[in-house]
Image 1 (cartoon, one colour):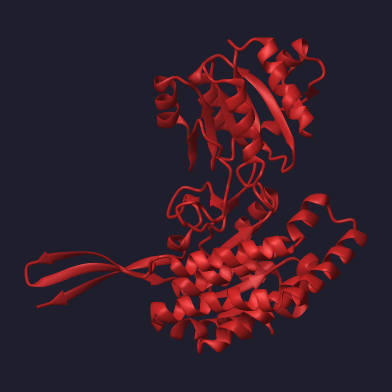
Image 2 (image 1 turned 120 degrees about the vertical axis):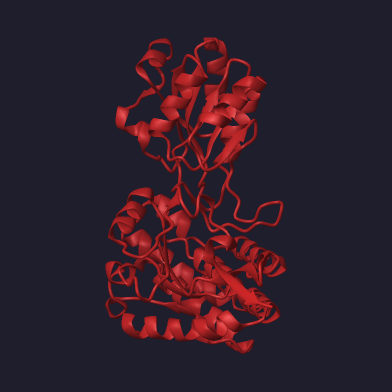
Length: 406
């Protein structure tokens, strides 16, 4: 399917989607989950083809892990689709006001056509499909060539499931190969695409965002900071770091940089470092810390602004909250930063002054697409404006204001 045909088809599909009742939209989301379970073997076989081809092309271990689907990961996707179907209707009225001889109220409405451009991570196609159906949007997918077989198999299953409910099967469309045009061609269709979400390595996401003329939610990943105050314990810091790296397959909110209060003793630091090394972490440190602990690997100053996206943690000393916050605000990715402290005043100062979409006090920033409260998130965004923090169902809607005369 050419890009032009895909755009026309997606626009046409968005019309019945916008009008579809919440019951029908939920049925479509649930049907995808059921179809994934029924076609698990075919999907995993397609994924195996992609994995084998990627290994031959020397694709990085990071992208290989992102690419890999397993029965457990598919079951996780099915659970997330169930949670999406259970969530309240995101297209609902927001409030009512009476103004003279008229009533005014606001409603949530779909955006129209959403484009997801992503590296590896084929499970994002499924999650985005469920979220777009729930919010009444059509979806155009543009995945990487390394996941071509998997993406094709998934979209075939998704389209058949949608069609079985009576909604247009082309509510979800996959662009592949030269026929589908380039990513630049897609993200500059500002008259026919209402939102672009690029997802992948931060440098790649930034490149897509620069090209896009369509409103864009830029996903963020890695380079999250933790400030360890004098009153924070070794055990708390260790647990926060370890848990933050546990996100699967992409540890979006992994703590990769730790600012340490200068009041901490060297034995406390060594306890933490030994514990992290025992769990496979590589540790780096600024020159001042390396003078006391030469086994820390040196860090280039540019690394303080860059994500590692693997099990590496860099350490730097900070005199106080002000110094730590200033450094974080100048260097972090600004989507998830944390503090470990027993001091209420220090935590409040950190909360008031750190420039981050999500802030964590004495708790792991670990990213989970299916949160305990039932919220489903495609990813995290650090940009200020209409969407900061988790990319949720609400991110895929906009508002209309209705005025009715008596």
